[in-house]
Length: 138
Image (cartoon, rainbow, N blue to C red; front, side, top):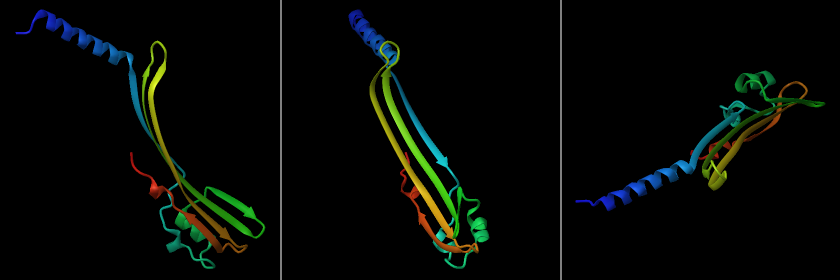
């Protein structure tokens, strides 16, 4: 049999715990941002220097994010950015607005394709870097 004194101390502990939880607010956010269009095809398989034309590049990769007009030919720039973020925090929001604990993790990676054309619109050279495959999932 539990005594009245024991029931009161359990009630006080429960009330104190509830008040403490109400005072300390915590939160967690996860975010993902994608900018640009994904480069779906491997340029090594689709582009041949001196052979592939500007119209073929547009068919394969779509419109570029940036076109630079130069004296000796155009430059197409394709970019795809992925950003993953996670944040966890515990704070006291009512009286002091004090942050007790905060943890933030941000990963950002980018795929880039730059295609150089000669004056006739044929690929002179290209550069490709794939970074988004290195992102870890949260």
